[in-house]
Image 1 (cartoon, rainbow, N blue to C red):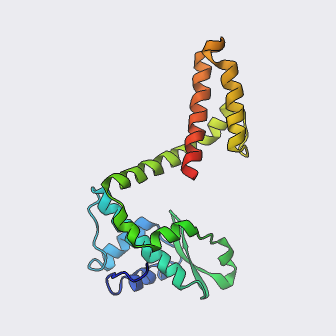
Image 2: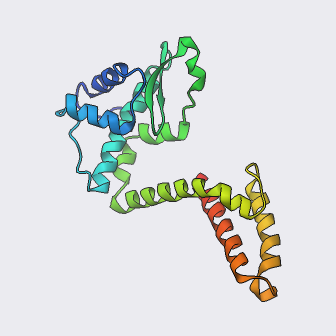
Image 3: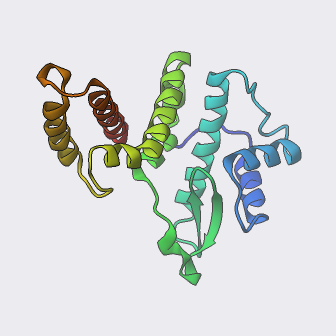
Length: 197
């Protein structure tokens, strides 16, 4: 769904701001720059309202993925990541560093997804994001608790969890504290697996 009525000049404004920042901008920096230089085109949302903030984010991401898609044959390519949005020179060999995420692009390019979200679903998205982030930070310790390395598959995690749970379960004469550590490690890795899907 590409025929969306966006403010005339907004895409050009985003392109200009990114072109003038060769090192790239974070999404927050881009929003600030739009607010500072083009306040009528992209008014700052109420930061206390998660739904309005999500809608603001969605419109910006929609624009960025349209820019990325519209410029894929040119000598530059738009790299979109959570911390850096940047035009890269494809002719200089930087094109290989860009890994577009087709499912994210499809989500943001379909403008009907904007109206599908409500306050509750946005809250769920935010909770899922923080759980996923926390799970990624805790994964190395959780793997170590289970005696596994970073390359372990989730199948390895399940097998090792069953072995350790069997050996340390209090009902089988094991230590309740050690069993709790094993259970917590497994739950962390299980959550991480769930939010990767």
